[in-house]
Length: 257
Image (cartoon, rainbow, N blue to C red):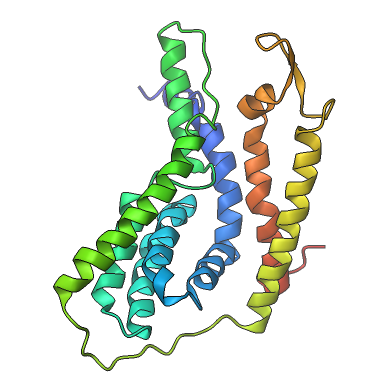
């Protein structure tokens, strides 16, 4: 066991995938980009979308692992209290989004990388010549995100909050709004994200694009090979580049150049 411990660790198929993905997400989380984005998402939300926004923010927070439990759940209670609604309803809505929607998202994340690589390892061990792509569950994840947001909001508004009764407390949180520097950081991160998305689109979708290759099964060019082999680095850069832009702007990252 001791002699093969290192080989078992380095030979574990999901290891490289998870490390690359988490490095990208880690940069975005460490610079504060993810937390600021979630706060911005939940600020100035129309009253009729409040429950849906809290649930949705809880769902997409799993892209940064457990950050939702730290940021979104207490923030949901504060936002509901600030709107004059029962804070326990906000807490419940946020918890439902974070926990109930932990595997759903609009983006492919670290959890998908882990599950897909484990599945591929199992397929290989069983002698099955098939390799799943990291985007295999993407459509299901997106549909689940939308469905869970709607259901979570309806349950909060129609069942949970009415049973809690009218909120008679006089507590109104003094929100610490994002500073001008943080807002500028979010703007710069968004600009970098849009530019990156445009560049990736140019490299992927036009006929003869760099990331397209001949697919024998389809008999034509496709991006299937890139989706199965190269998308992981694309996801890494999707978080790293905006994270760097935000971190440099707010001063979290210094002496970068």
